[in-house]
Every structure is written in structure tokens, then in C-alpha cells.
Length: 333
Length: 293
Image (cartoon, rainbow over all chains, first blue to last red; front, side):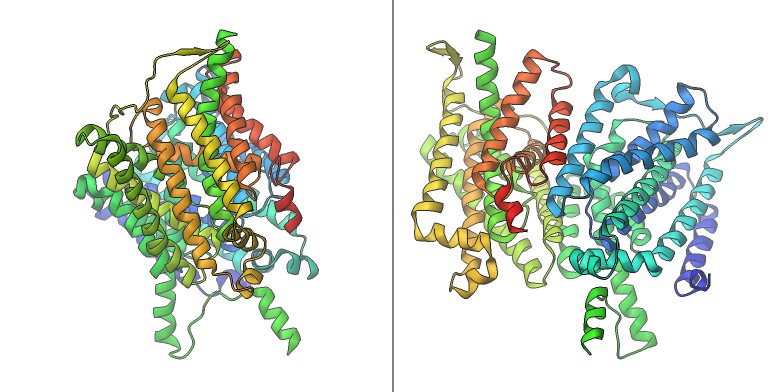
């Protein structure tokens, strides 16, 4: 349990405190919506970070799980009349099952093949949501009612606080996994699958667990996004979502603890600033992404870590180290 | 029979374009293990440049073609020098470079948006589009031009790869870049050739397919995805397998749309690709790639 309260948890407390005070400083419902979306994307990005940043398995199906989660949540309520408190966990479980079913055969694939197979899966899903109008409501989507219990119904501010708490729990789990035994196994899989296997890591089990976990993060994010938008439609699973997700991963820093949150803040707020540039928006977006990739490969959180490390210990800056390499080098010494 | 031949030719036409994008992707992948997410944008720029030079400036066809080629080649060099080389120098893994090419694709779309705007423009066709009959088959000149340029590029690629010493160097790099380097092959030149040749193939495909797809700056992404699917279905390791994959996707798409359900043609195609990957993880013809692992 001690590792739960070790390094970095002060930062989580800080993030949560700032996040909880924030609504008091905002003036409009639009701004509240924006900051709510930050936490949705942070959740989505945490799953992706575990999967790609730490385990090295790229998935382009995250936006599909995002959409399936939201659709499941909406349809269980609209079609079966379930209460949202039942629909939410069931939708998450459905996504976990779907991820396990497609993950088991797909995770045999590596790198680009995995990326393309997962992309094929998500394009198929988007195609279905767009076309199967009777079941999914087509491009208009399905309404999601605000959560209501008796006379009380959840306001936008209450939804925001809920999202902050969910995202904070998500972040604690995310960081706990990275620093724990599973995290080491994941990094070993990323650096060298054969090496990891020879050290006793069950590569398939690790990959599948992380794949399902990432899908669950995406589903929770998707349900949050559905509640904010008060509806779900096929755009939840479309390409812009995965582009935003990749941008968050790159800008925040791949394989870092706070990258997903930092990246989500930048990626949700930057288009607001860029909107002033009108037609130049897409161009600037692309250029910024490229500049980050080339000049700040560890993202903003890499910059912060380096600054922090320089203040604490002037001599050594912590970088991402290869676990298997450490072990192999240690053995050789 | 009429319906069949119309479907067959429209399938072969689209399939040729998917195949050419797949071939481009596979050539670059063979040289440096990078997937170029901007490949479809080369097709888009080919189409849009054709509009610019042929319709807006009214230049004669040969001049317009040369200028279009110049634009896509300049774009390929920009991709290499602005994205690929800096990332390679910093030892970025291939998937990070793929995200870099995605950034390049977004930038290209941003530039294209400034030049051409978001609306669909009509593309001047080089060849007549009136239907004509060849024996029992119904087609038109534009379709025949696309299909024959597909065959021509396939032949040219085969000739370069298997009948020249430069092609031998390309194949050696594909098998093992390090050993190829030790044998005195300049892998950076191979990579540059792959980028330039792929840009030429995709750009010309863009000029030809433009009248059929319509000139819109958003067509690039869909073509990139279809090109990938082609390369993955056939097998990334060989340009010819990738091209065959493209043809298969194009024809299957047209047939499912014509005889089955036109609404669900696209999801069904993706489902089939997914199923193929379950059974054959390195593509239908991907034994070469599988053996190398």
C-alpha cells in the first residue's frame, strides 16, 4: 500500500484541488463544458498511455470503445429502461467483454498490423452506427437523459465534480499500475517481447489485461462524454477522436505518469485559442504536433520532469529506462 | 452481364487506386519500416493540383502534368527532410514516425484548405467519360486509363526491383537494413527513392481518379486508410501483394454493393479484412514478412 502514497501522489492531490476550485472561477456554461471534456479526454488518454506508452501496443480502436461505452449506456436506458446506475457498470462490462473477445486474436499481431486491424474494427463499428438506423439511431444518435433520482437531477457542475473524482481515481490506478509489478512486466513487453518471456512474463496475459483495461478507461470516458453532450452519435467513434488521442499522447508525453492529464488540458484548450486563426487552424495544429514530436519527444511532462529533476538533483535527469536492459546489464555486471 | 461488367470495371478502377496507394506504402515500408500516413494526401494533392493547373490556369496537359509531378515530388522531399530525417536522427521508433507522418498529413490538409477551400470542386477529365463497349464489357476511357496505369506502374516497379542493380539494393535493404549498409548500400538514398517514387505513383493516381472521386481536400484520409487495408490484406512485405490486396478490396466492395447490400458494403469489407487477419496475421500473401520475424 505504501507505493500508493509515494511519489507523484502529491501532484494528484494538487490537480484535484485545482480542478475542484476551478468551476468557481468560470463564468459560463460553455467554459464548464470545456473543462469537463478535459477529464473525459484525460481518462481516454490514460488507457491509451498504458497500452501504447507503457506496453508498446498501438490500438486504433480506443475511439470505438469510447463510442461503444456511450452507446451501451444510452441504449440500455433508452431501449430497456434501465436505471443509469445499472446501465453504467453493465455498459463498462460489455466493453470489457468486446475488448477481450477481439483482443485475444488481434494481440498476436504486432506494430502496424495491430494498428490497422484495430482501425478496421473501429471503422466497421462507425460504419454500423451510421447505417443501422433502427438500432443505433443513425447519424442523429440517441439522447442521454441527465441522471435523475427522485426530485434530484444531476446539474452540469455536479457532473463536472463527478468526472474529476472519477478521473482522479483513474489516475491513481494508472500510476499505481505503472509503478507496480504489472507495470514492470508491461515495460518489459514493450522493450523486448522475447526477452520478457524469457524472464517469466506471460506476454499474452499482460497484453490482454492492458488491452481490456484501456478499453474500460475509454468506455468510462465515453459515458462521461455522452453525459456532457446529453447524446451519443457516430462522431464519438470517428477519426478526429483518435487524432486528438494521439496528439494528447505526444504532447503530454508517452509513457509518463501525468502526460495524459497535461496533454488533455492542452488538446482541449488549444483549439479554443486556435479558433481565432480561422482557416489556419488545421495547419497550425499539424505543425504543432510535428514540432512536439521532433523537439519534445517526451512531451510537456518530460520537460516538467527535467525541470523538476534539475531543481532537486542538479546532476541526474531521470529518463525512460529500459527494464530488460537494466536487468541484462545488471546480470552482466 | 451488363451489371456485372459495370461493377467489375468500377471495382477494378477503385481497386487500382487502392492498389497504387498500397504499393506506395509497401515500398516505403520496405525501405525503412515506416508507414506513411500521408500517402493518401499525395493522391489528394495530385487531384487538386490537376484542378489548379488544368482548370484554374488553363495550362496545356503536358505542362500541367509536369507541374503536378513537381508539386508531389517537392511534397515528398518536404516529408523526408521535415519529418522523417529529424525523427530518424533522434532514434524515434517507427510508430512515432508514423504519428509524425500523420502530423504531416494534417499540415498538408491545412495548406490545401487555404488554397482550395473546403468545397468540392469539379475535376477536368483528361479522357472522355462516355460509356463504351469492349466486346461484352462496358467501360470508359478514364477507367481504362486508371487500370492500365496500375498495370504499367506494377510493371515498372517489378522492372526496377528485379532487373536493375539499384532494385537489388532496395530488396537487400528490405531484407536487412544493417547488413545492406555493411555491403556499402546507401540506405538513405533507397529511402529517398522510395519516398519520391511513391509520391509519383500516388500523385498520378490522383490526377486520374480525380474526375471519378470529385476534388475535395478530405479525400486523402479515406484513401490512406483503404491503401493500408490493401497493404495489410495482401501483406506489407511485398509491393505486389499490397497491390493485389487493393484490387481485391476494390472489386469486393463493388460486388457487395452491387449484388448484396450497398449500405453495408464498407463495414462488410472491414469485417472481412479483420477475419483475414485473424487467420493470417501477416496478410494473405505475407509469407515473406512472416518468415523474417
